[in-house]
Length: 272
Image 1 (cartoon, rainbow, N blue to C red):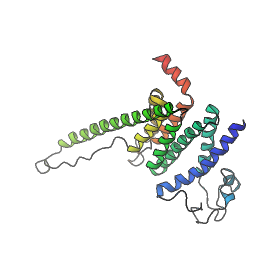
Image 2: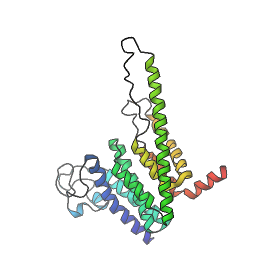
Image 3: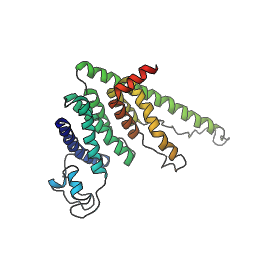
Image 4: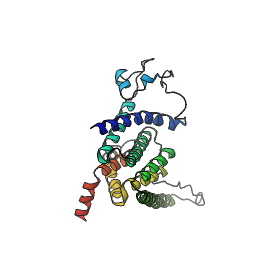
């Protein structure tokens, strides 16, 4: 129990810093310099205003100076970070490779929140997620295998992106031929349709490094199932509302599959 308590505290501390990363990276601001400050009044926060989770509870979710509301994102990210560290520590103990694995999942958490809020996936966090996932091994051979799986999934997703983009663009082009006239037959304004973003490919590399081939493919299938209800819900919404961020579903599926890897592998082997 003491190990899990230590893991939870470490997770809370990293979660507090993760909030800074989520807030500043999309704005192009430094995550190291400039002290933490209220986003409403701009006043610098005291050290006791930055105690993970506890400060938010004691301040009742309001700024100590201007009393403006503090987003629920802050305690939620800290709690989720603590939960991630506890779950990984419960699975592996307080081992150094487990620390890298937990950090990789924290990067996926940050990417999920940023993708949800801003519809963007910063490359810096994606690269860190891949690096931590590759290094989360108990031997040099394990690191090499993680690297191979990361490259395999990145390459596979790149080919899938090319194939889908080509198919979608070709379909639009063929449909546009029907509207051609003698006036515009020499002009091709068909847009190139991207079926998948580069950020998703990098997330796939992290999934490959963390899970391997079989579990990685299962996680991709699970992420599609998790996203399906949301996709159906926004089906009749506006184009902007139909832009559902997919990284949160990839990250959640990866975490679920990673925790229940033995049970899922047994299920796969029993059915194939």
